[in-house]
Image 1 (tube, protein in one colour):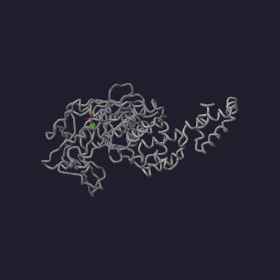
Image 2 (image 1 turned 90 degrees about the vertical axis):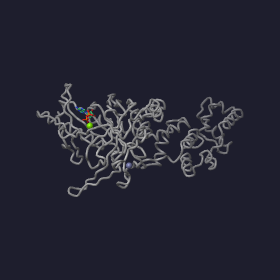
Image 3 (image 1 turned 45 degrees about the vertical axis):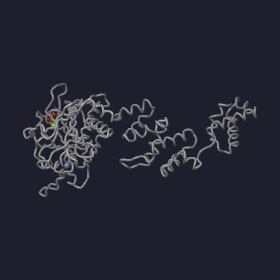
Length: 473
Ligand code: ADP
Ligand code: MG
Ligand code: ZN
């Protein structure tokens, strides 16, 4: 029994993600987290009178990429509007956003259960500055570095029914945005944050209940907890015969509860109107196709291909698609040597070890060289231990592995043809061996291998000799 038994939970999310541009969306200030406060600012992003915005094309392209990733329709015509409110983090006293004509319309994300969560829109806007409250009666610090950072806001339809679904949805959003290099979504830096709108519906009823909104949740954990808390709180209110008040609530992660910030009556009237300083964005079908051409496949599609086409275990596919970099690296190796599982093993075990603990890494060897080493091991020209030595040496010197292997005298210089030659010679010279082999091969294999080793000065690869015997005898 739970207070929630009589109700269905109804959730709609609004997600903000900071776009990975070099500069801000309406000026040329650096878009960089963690710099000295108020150093990445200019008259435009600090709202000086007369300063005029200029639209960052890259921000528009990234926002369109997000739209294409989630199946939105890209608007041929979209409009920036001013959202007016007065608050210290907003130097201009209005935020440039989109309302009536957003850049991306519709779209959807499918959860693992097969459930479809519809998107209402993904629009482009700017972030506000950051306030740091240093204590009651002491004051508040403001940093405008973040002001004017490009943001996308994704708004879902109220299709989400549980905390688990909300978190799965957010993870899918983050995965795609990171993979396509649209946003880095570092939640701990505020790079991705989420507002949760939540109401309850009596089981069997078609009528939506009154919703509340919890703003700026910045971890999956707090989304999970905030939803659980708020659903139970509303259920208790309704079960006791009360009514849910439409309001904005603030989630307090330390106390594990939310409290009212402002009710609908105190809600702001933002007095939106089209920004006269910015032209509408016009996007042609050619623009859309050009941008689509720069996109990579969504990770889930790559994973599917790795499992179905390359025969990799789900676990490998998961790790190899954890970033676009690793995934591209893996695919380039496979292009050089078509042995996906072996390559996967080397990457997951031997290469990952070399970059352990690094957040944004580059493997210290190029794909072609790694593939070449793996090929030598798989073709038994060298064994795995020697292969790993070769890998180290390759990283150290940057030389071609084939050249290095020769220099280091690692190569077994006896070719298959030379081995076969010796085997044929033995068969002719020693009829008894051939006879014995056809009766019980296991009894003479040792002898045959010994013969080849003796006649090659021990330079033949004994495993390879064993494999080749049956071709002659
Ligand atoms: P607003 O403009 O007041 O923010 P919207 O209609 O744009 O309202 O909705 C904002 C978010 O609230 C959307 O994600 C939407 O899915 C969600 N939402 C709307 N109605 C409900 C409801 N009854 N219960 C839960 N979420 C809702
Ligand atoms: Mg809203
Ligand atoms: Zn600026």
